[in-house]
Length: 444
Image 1 (tube, one colour):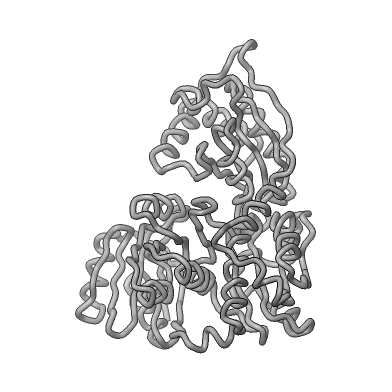
Image 2: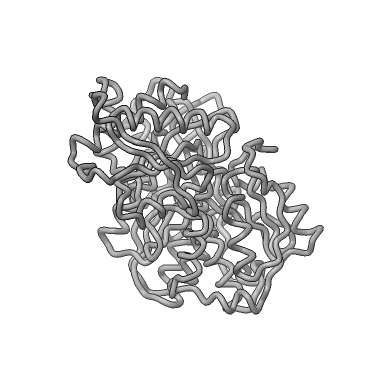
């Protein structure tokens, strides 16, 4: 990701908006923003220049979380799209682009391919008389907070009466621009680490248990009721219990869904790689449950199709249609805190009532094998009686034993991703190892 690439993608996105008739209004613009990475300002300026060169005005919102920016696009009648500079949970040296339509959701796969083709072929630019103007957009974080606090689904007074002590780690990402203030306005006592938005991540920024040692220590040292970890662009939330133990990212969506379904009935959607703990929440509530292919845009599409009341991905990404069809760590935090307050229980007490599955994730080089050949070998080698889903790679499930295995090609690397879940870590490791042995016979 270089300034030249960012300019060209801005040009391609602008060309797409013009030629599809989405930017006919002369007052229309694209909202541009970024997470806190040190390359963000430079690349944001470059992408904005590309949009303006294609004849599309821009409004720069500065550092903000991805869900903050997408909500700003959705609620602004003059915004025809959004462009976010972020590499999400990836390490500090990376950056990337996320493109949104005027409805505040990411571009559909077909629209994304259309922009990609324009990027590769070379987009048409405006002449001297049709260049897009610039400008800034203030107050997007305040707008996001206000919209969350005004959600009828939330019982904000319950959280305020409980006044929980919360340990928060924003890893020096864009979450620091909104999550601390949201928690304070919910009545929480906030004990933060990594709240600066300078982009100097002190650790691997992905909020998985292996990276949450400092937050776990902080929970114990300040006596917090819960620990919250946000990824750099604020769309994923991971939880740490009151004993300082990370509980796994899939529980964020499971608990958020439990709160929502306690107040509103309707379908739940997640992806094929997410924990069955989410499915069990839907089953207890007696509502339909659906799985989509992996990817936020695909989850959002299925949520729209089935009229879901809540959904998301098991990596800590909660999507609440009442607010917007995008993953949002801020609204996830509010929903989980509301569940604890309404149940008058701790996180450990709630999880003690639930089946705790163990998940194993691996990635293996494809090693010259065709995916269909790999899938055929898995069917032959795995336990009998599996249900099968081929929508995104191969997912084999054994509901009676509470086990499943999902093997799918990565969208960003020449590898296969292997995800297995079972009631015990030994069984999860065995299922993941089965797939690994097929792909790499010399592996342990």
